[in-house]
Image (cartoon, rainbow, N blue to C red; front, side, top):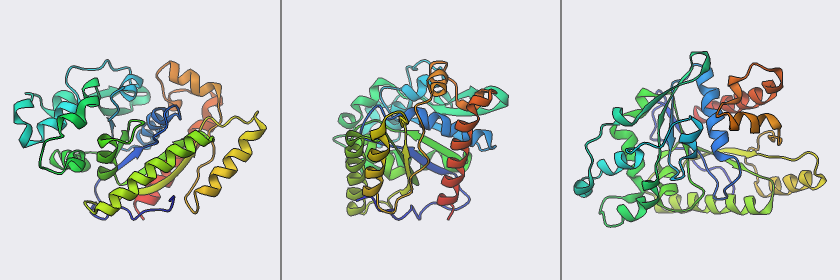
Length: 286
């Protein structure tokens, strides 16, 4: 169930990599992880594009961006010839937001919007492969040649949006809270990856590892719960747990990454995210 899958072999080594943060269970800190990982890459000098594929648009909100009238949903629909009647006169350059971060760091964002919740219904009647819409969108606009890393935040569901993300990315990081509900969410999302492999419509993304989050060191049961989940993950890589630190909550409330603080109390979190991105790059280029 939790073995590593074959990485996407169609991606040329000199092209940018697409990674996604996924878990069917909500409330595991998936969006917060994606936000900080994107900043970790940017602080290493990488050109980063963040792609919000969750109708709730929390990823967009973290960048302190108001949900726009035109967003990723409209761009995806515009790539489907069969839906010409629904096309909007918008260019990708009109939708991409160039966010200005501190220390001269810039991260580009393709925001989400509520219309994404109707994505599956919108494309239900098309003949083109519905699972590959996002993949073909990335190819059409040559986003891999423009960015070193594309970070996708996916919704906590198992629908067509999730399938599109898994078909489009090179690798997946799986944040989870060490409890049985989050564990079931991991099993469910991995089953979707397995189903994609069975369909043989594209290569499956590489498992980039599991991220234990909101680990409560004060709770004695937490350690045994994490150990039990690790046993179910087989040989898959598990990152150092992120503890439930007050600094995380503070940065989230202020819509800042942990890299936007100079205080020494953020150094440990900065180290964890930097090491994670280094591991991800090593795995995707191996």
